[in-house]
Image (cartoon, rainbow, N blue to C red; front, side, top):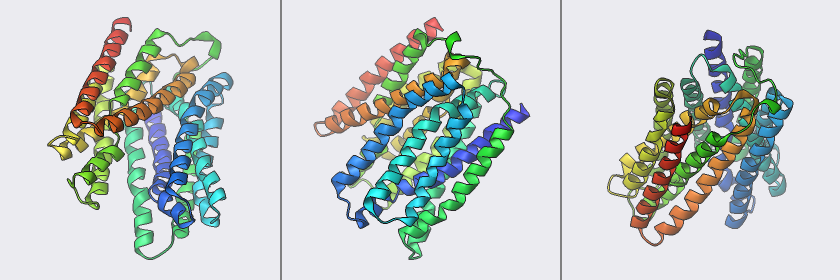
Length: 373
């Protein structure tokens, strides 16, 4: 158990450093591209294309990881592509910078399924809920550090390129910690071959639950738009609220992960409840409470919802399952953003109704899963 905990912590540090790099970049990449002459349409297409590629590749590389059992190879490859972000410091041509941005998203698509599989294989005795929760909590620290680095760099009067160049430091440390994780990998659950297991109906019920519960959630960008449009909070306060949500995310991941290890899949009933409450409160009369509930949901999304895949799917097909799962979650976020954004233009009450109905349907699939599991 001690070796498994050490591995989870080291992998969490790897994700912390990775998030420091690409979350830091995501906070400024729009303004940096603007300085290179990019239009809003260009930036929108580029970022949307990056997310589409990243999520689409997860299914393919999840399957390839299981087929070849080269989990570590694809994990290293995916993390290595994060180096494309500090490489931006050497270029000011919009085309090259765009390719480097897309390369990082490709890396995300490559590494996510095999990395989650490795964590699941190592965490059986330690507890999958707390393992994924600890990993997410460390990951979120990086999401806070990265934007702060660029804040300091720009505040002190240095340019964007200096900020990108500084990111070579966490990038080198990231690869070093990933190597440390590899040599200390304590696999306690084995994967013997892709032919010996299939994705049964329980997995598909679970996929529908996760897609629908995610589709009922309003993303922070829409919540921030609501705050701005209605002058609920000032411009400088809105990023602080996002940071607060990410802090709650980290705490939620740890607590819900521990709770999941005790109560199992029943813990997931909290997800649709908290999701609806986050929408109802954020767009209603208790916006700060809504932000806190949003953080609670995101913490569960990245911990117990990921952990449950390992309890539903056998080791032989787990990377394949994680690839499909991540793609499904991405599709859920897309559907949720589209529907909530469209309904918001008509009536906030329709947003509430949509979220309530979609979460009730999601709950029905969870009930179906638990009856068969």
